[in-house]
Every structure is written in structure tokens, then in C-alpha cells.
Amino acid sequence: MRGCILDVGSGLGNIAKYFNTENIDKVILSGRTEEMYLQLKNRFSHSEKCAIIHMDITDERCIKMLSSYRINVVTCLNVLGHIKDDVKALANMHRILGKKGILLPR
Image (cartoon, rainbow, N blue to C red):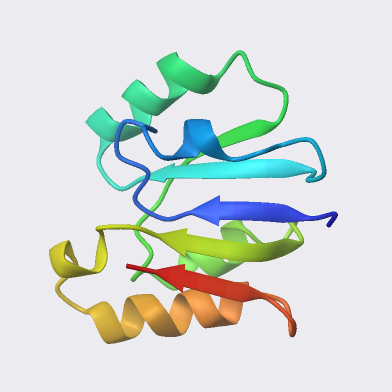
């Protein structure tokens, strides 16, 4: 599979380290707060396969921010319970994905 994985609410990146990047173009890790973004950047900025972004999945601007990536998979693990407008978050994840994209919420 070619394309990208977007991990919404990556936290410290504990789950992202298990992604097999051999057959994908990029793993996009996201942090909503400045603190989480900086921690991800410190931990993963050395990896050519990782992009670190500071975004709020409920904000419409994230769709434009991610438009240059061909995102095939969106993961959202242990995050939805922490988002006030989870319906908006899911709608934006759906808009970010390609037609045959896969959403993996938990």
C-alpha cells in the first residue's frame, strides 16, 4: 500500500512506533496541544517517514493542512472520548480520507 497514515491524537507516539513504514510513504503524527506537538517532534523528527503536525481534528483548517498528503488510513485510538465534538471530528476524518480509505477508531 502506498500513501499515508494519519494518527489523530498521537499523544506521546507510543502506538505510532508499531506502524510498519516499509510500504507507506508517510506516517503523520498529530498533537492538538503545543506540549504534545513538541514532544512528538522531539521523539520522531529524525524519521524521514514521519511528519509531525499541530492540529485540532475538529477544526476545518486541518482538512486543507492535510490536502497535500494522500491519506489512506486514519487511526484514532483512545482519543474520541476526549473530544467534545466527536461527530465533527469523525466527519473531518472522513473528509480527509480517500474514497477507499480506512478509518480505525477506538
